[in-house]
Image 1 (cartoon, rainbow, N blue to C red):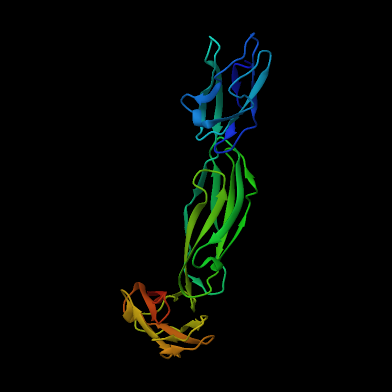
Image 2: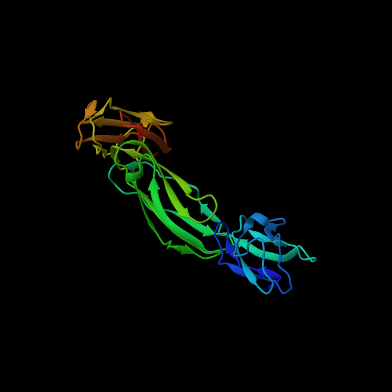
Length: 311
């Protein structure tokens, strides 16, 4: 019987190697009978065999056993090809050895959270890194965005169809909400690493309100006198009328700031209104408050920080 051992090259877990062949030859003067062939040992199921041998083998004849290696796990895998027959030396054995290898996928981070974004405008890019920390090349068959609001997220990537051991690539994702409120989706990566597909969750909030600027700073103002007005613009960039609009000054020194507005209690789609804010300090030094706009948008209330210095 030749050879008496087979060693297989590194093989990706769950995939089959090319076959290696063992030849059984009857060099005796009588037929071999009762031939039985099996894989035995610790990792016997990781090796498969097919054979041209029947239950008998005539004197001078030979047959073959073809063995393939399909590792079920990473690391060294061993077994024995055992041939039982009528020869006094039975059973004859062939040692089988191979190493299972596997890519290992990791994502960092595993979730992305976007700040509030105006509807139909695009956020800054956030990046997910895909790394192969295994001991075999990773095959990447697809990177897609899935989930409830998948259309609100877009991706570009440096990842190709393969990723070498210890290598990494990036997936860059932007958020462009098509509606107000919480928007969710996931990046899904299909590959040959265990646990595929690998996913990272994404969450963002769309708003139909534009408020600019988001802060007002007043120059130094004499106590008891009123500054020139500064203006905040409230715009409805959503798809439905804003209702229940209420505007107030809140915070530590709210009484030092006064506001007048062209805004009513509702604001049509595409329309805007203004809020004029003045500063009248009641004491010296730094004075702060917030302009608070409450409305029907899911991100309500919107706030503008107010600061000034009394002298």
